[in-house]
Amino acid sequence: MTVRLTLISPATSHALKEVRFDDDGPLDPVGVERAEAAAGSLAPAAAAYTSPSPRCRRTADALGLAGAEPLDTLAACDMGRWRGRTLDSVAGAEAEAVALWLGDPTAAPHGGESLREVRDRVAAWLDTLGEQAAGHVVAVAEPDVIRAALVHALSAPDEAFWRLDVRPLTATRLSGRSGRWNLRSGHDLTP
Image 1 (cartoon, rainbow, N blue to C red):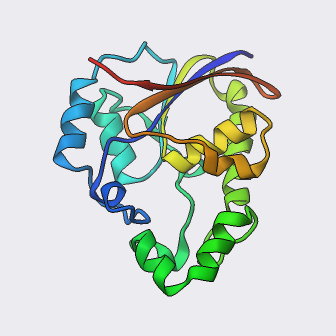
Image 2 (image 1 turned 90 degrees about the vertical axis):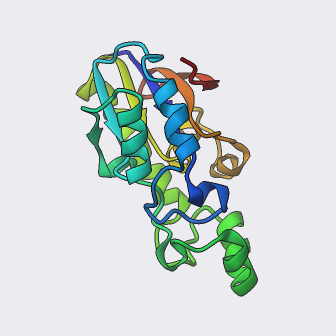
C-alpha cells in the first residue's frame, strides 16, 4: 500500500546547540516558540508517531500532534557512555574512537548502537509502514533516525548517513512503499 510519510525533525534544544549527544533535555524556548508557530501547517494524517525522546514528544505536542504514538523503533541512536557529552569533549578524550565511529558504520566504540543497527531498526519500520497505516503518516523523529530512513529509502551506502543534513523543525517527505520510495527533502515548517 502506498504511504505518504512526513518525517519532522524536532525543534532546537540546548543539546543540539551545544553539539552534545542528547541527554533527554527539553526544547529551548525558541524551539518551543517556532514549533507552536508552525502548528496547523501539516496536512491531516491518518497516523502520527514520535520518537520517545522528550524533545520529539514536545515538538509533536507543539505542532498539534498530541496523539502521536511514541515508538521505540524511532529512538535516537543509543550513544552509550557518550550520552550527554559534547562531541568536542569526547573527541578530546577519545579521538581514535570518534574517528572509528565516524568512519565505520558498524562500529560502536561508545558501547551503544552502531549506525548500521540504527539503519536496520528504522528500515524494518519503514518497510512495514504500509501494513500499519495507509495514506498520510507523520513522524516526529530524531535527525539520525531521519538520516537512517533516507539512506534506506534511497538504497544509499551507509557512508551517505553523514552527508545528509537534517535541520531542526523541517519536514522530509517520502512517498511510496517498501522497495520503492520517492524523496522530497528539507522543507521548513511554516505557519
